[in-house]
Length: 311
Image (cartoon, rainbow, N blue to C red; front, side, top):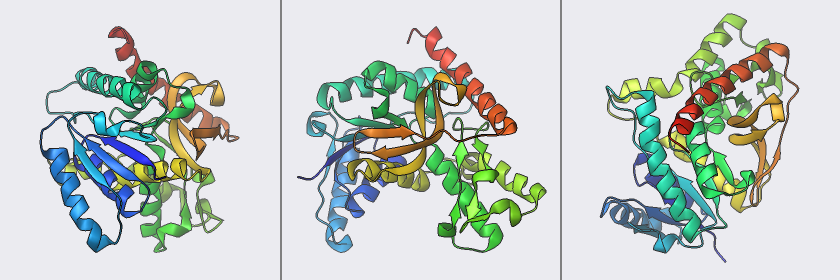
């Protein structure tokens, strides 16, 4: 029996995630959005591409959660982007309400689903979904580290003029300026990247990674990244549905791992059936530990906004 995935939010990230899932033959997809006609139109357009792309997976658009019932995975992309004049706290409050409402509907219609959160601020919205759903922590996961690591792999491949498939990279921490790229755990076909790129230049590439999302926003002017985020969400979904047990960097609820408690922070995890199978604890040096703690502290300051709102 085929698996079913619901993608909530039919914007660029959501629609592209639906496209990736169908065309990579992962699952049937239900695309849900509150704007009438948009999820139906995008689903129909993707469905009409199926004969050309050579797949027969179903894509359904809806303005309610009825067709999504019994989903195995739900990817939450719904939420607003930060607008000029909008404070960080305003964005959190606005998207908190959106993700809260979405999560309540998911619990009602797909109580056994694994939640993959893509909405921003990512780590904070994971908290919202976790608290509202009441799901075990293994079934609420944030998409961040895969995207950040993919950006780092891209920049390193460009620098070295090699295939990005040859680059293995790891990024920990919150999804934002305080993320923690780990050059000590970054390799090119097994060769430490620190042996291939001078330290000063490597730090420039790490900093570009931290600013990766902002760089795209600056270029697009009126939007943000969506192709790579969609690919990351689709990879997580595939790992879960096919029980691949892939080790991937994701935002998960830590309960003492890495010395961090009761926060969603990006760390390497094993993804398979049912969500997170294991949290991988790396042996970090003191500098890496401090950087990760600073990132966790930044996430904690954002979570405090939720607490002031009574969540």
